[in-house]
Length: 242
Image (tube, rainbow, N blue to C red):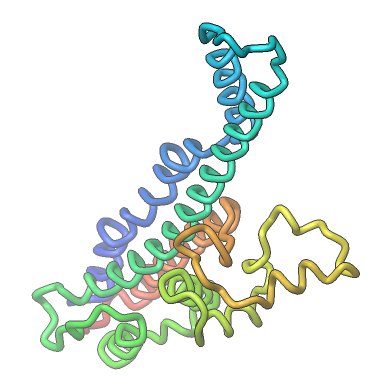
């Protein structure tokens, strides 16, 4: 098969799920976790209204402060739960994006036209070797490779918590380990440094690893560019046979 054929396969099929991820995740999924402060206030108000509209018992003294305190606690509990769930979702989406990248790289090698089929394991390192030996393309030389490598570290940290990948990621991008709520805290207090350097224990419970919506979008855009770079390479070698 020719480079031109491979380029068309990437543009028509391999890149589509990446584009869909970026478009639909940010249109249909992420917004469901927006405006948590406002929604928590509404939930607290609804709780308070329901409480004061209950029939008064014999020992009711007419003091509404207890209801207000309960409503505040209820709203705060809901907010903390949803904030944790949102972080879990963002961490998982980043991990999923990386594995989608691996799988789309691997699927190009499933074409029956290849004599030398790609390895059974769709792992990034295996794909790098296969693309280099069979397709004569060094993926590590592409401009978006550093982002792909960072995304792999994020995925490994999300799945395995503290370990080799989290250590490398901490050196590469320490801000990912600091809760955005504390991002503006004075560094002299050393709270931020403590948060960055403490071991990651429960990234799939929204703790320890903090992928933001902005960072997730950077990853999605970068992965799409990565595949476009691959397609561009094969278009430049459209008459070459593989």
